[in-house]
Length: 504
Image (cartoon, rainbow, N blue to C red; front, side, top):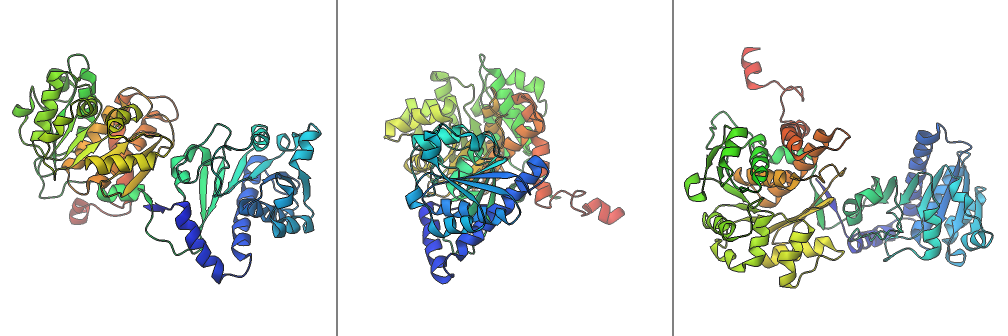
């Protein structure tokens, strides 16, 4: 797990560090890391460093200063460096002086445009983005946007891509799209909320004394440690029994997918209640399938909603699930029903866990009547809905945001878009249900399920479009990947399993 800090948190910590460090020392340290990464990118793209051409896009702030100092360091490796200045009269003086002493070329962006030239960026081997820093908000100015649009070479962003809001990750179309972002001191929200814009993020540790993070990101080892595995004394009832209430005569596939992911996620037992019992039995014979929640038997958690329908029958099913008084994941039609019939919340015991897993449109259905708009700040909106409804809210998206009623928030950034396929959300519902049935912190359970969902999508895709059924099949591989990272998979970590220790 690693933390993510807001700009205000980072700036406060930087102010303390700057007061203790020699003048300019932190900037030169940061810039040296940028130069090292730039050299590595040049080597990867062109096979060499000396004689290559790097263009610096330089604004008036400290990010521009970082870029200029990095250019000075690159000159020592015989790299041709040209700095394009967007605010010549406000450019960082020590950085500009250092680049000039090193023999770097400096041009005025306005003069180049007046001469009808932006071929500098089109002919570069690498472009370093130092246009704006953490203080900037809103889209790039037209002049900067035109230069960015002309870039065809790999891009290295200083701290974060220009035009991306550092705290919300919102990016206008004109924003820089970086291949690599070198950031300093701490990860900022944009690095996970706008991961496709940032590319590979490299953190340079500046030794900052930081407070508790604003956001947290689970890693594979965290998921592997959190995921429930059977022990020697376990049986099918002690590992967590997951109930699934999903699907209908119109949408039986939703039930098959949600049930399948719960089965594949190592639930001790899965019970199904609904109209698609025959389809579920035919695909998953190990599941106890019945026609109603009342007949399903005891479970440790329910997953309800996908393909359920939004009529009276679906409403009755959701009410019965909430009456059961166990942790519950509500998705899809279940969320629509809660929005349409707020009295359904009366069936929930106040201290019982509910995890809502909406996509953007479902979020709007349940949040807008409460005066909560999603807007560009997805974290703030998710936190507010979690607080108002006293639920864990998992807002699906390329960067999934998971917030608890108390404000603790996880972010899980997908590394691809392979999960944008019909039925993918049903798979996630089953995973969350299985995680809740196993016990533990509901926020971490939802976050771990989200991580496994992404990993299963990657495994199923293998670099090409895939289907939700293939994602279900890949769930055990995703679980194993997490267990290996956590050192809980014998044979992958050099450890012997209990049988091997006893018998060789």
